[in-house]
Length: 276
Image (cartoon, rainbow, N blue to C red):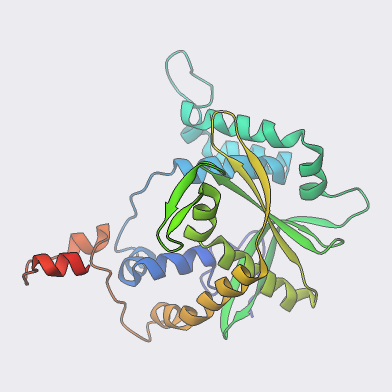
């Protein structure tokens, strides 16, 4: 398989990544159109930029400075009284960083001790069900046998309804299950084992976007990891066949791309809508 490096990781299309896979699961037709240049995504970049702002700080000073240099025009205000300062929507990023950077337990967990081998932004790759798969891990403690993934969340303990569990759960639960982090970490664990031959424990370091950020270290229970990996294995070949142009993509019918292609060539009934 092709060797992945920090320089070619994001340009590479020979491997499937979890974020790429999720786009194809949402709407194969839209994802293929985006990759082919036939559709330009329109989305709010703020959550992604905020997450990367926090992530890059804990990766290294060099990484944080490079991120600011590359994205400064999107982060820094250019006019008014706040000219030259972080825009309002990104100020919470500094609070999130402050809540973690002086926490001894976080530093031990995320950065390790001087005698431990800890690798940041470690690239892992291998095969899942015969499909080439890749991932990038925030912090891997090769000495202690665990890896930590830093996740930014709206909240951790606010209660929200979960339709699948049919009850209210803390926001962190909806965040982890809704974004499929249990699947993502299960894949990373599998790829790490393929590369090293060792078992690693996946851990989430969650930090909230609240005015006073909350934080928590969350371990994903084994049954959720197994379920998450099984979900990926059940769908990965279908996704890869679409990417390889072996089968035609199915349109979801409701996303922005599908709406742009829509023609009024049928009639739906009220019962149809209720059934949907």
